Length: 303
Image (cartoon, helix red, strand yellow):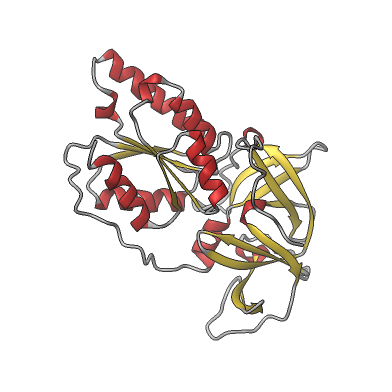
């Protein structure tokens, strides 16, 4: 089962998410964004490797590529003991990982506005970024595979922050991301660059906070750029996605001169095109500190 992660040109889908439903055993239903899936296949022979532990099951060779195999049920604490029979081959942020699951079901397509934030029942670095209700009332938990990989397959950030830009006159940066892992990394980049910053955890909260900042600046006869010099938006977020947020901000004359950078683990040209069409100035790969800091410096050094 292969997935074509390109949209048809002209298709209006910026507010939609396609979700592959799957099972980890038991009654719970889980989902992954189809854009991050290369294919689904039968669970093949897994080779054990020295030092593997926890949810890391070993590696497989798939069409000449060696991929780590992660038992998703073990990784998110939802293993029922039922054997895994399928592998979801996922690609995101230049990584390829095989997630072993019990079974796969079907693909559904829902508006991003139907994706609700999860309850704070798990650890701060939760494994679920959103929840969707199906027509029969069943709930689908959307797995945050970036956070899962951060815990199970941690890798050192090999992309250093680019410094040396003349940013002394730059105002604070505002960013929005629903992932605690991503927010921490973005904060590290901005701190290293010497930029003040504030943030929101989803698109709706970001819109509310930014509109409040704009109103306050107007009431105090201040330039908005003194309060917000740049906005960073994640493409994938519950309630309101990054493209929708960007279009809303660009539709407000007060934000006309405020540049926007979109970052995403979805790195196809089609995703970048959608972001640019929504109004972002630069589209960069998520968790790439060099690309992000270069983009920030490029926009703010000449502000």
